Length: 70
Image (cartoon, rainbow, N blue to C red; front, side, top):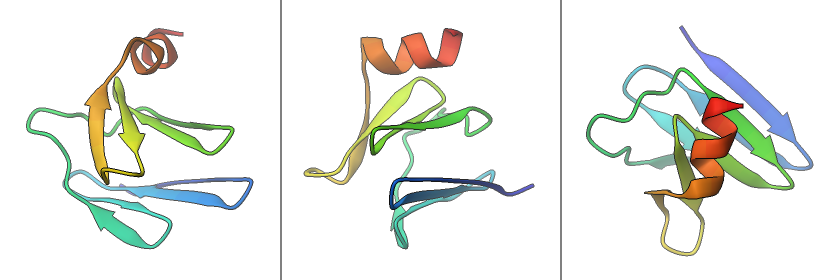
């Protein structure tokens, strides 16, 4: 199953093993689930992780946990 989210010029496509953000494939952390995704003000949150564009990686943050639980 493929999930697609678009907001304010930011796009995110998630499948079971792959995440593509703004046309660029991003490596997902081991154990990360892609069943929950949100884009808020250009920030991407997936499964309790936040995408950090400068480092091009995902990081667990409190904000991402909040978005997952909310």
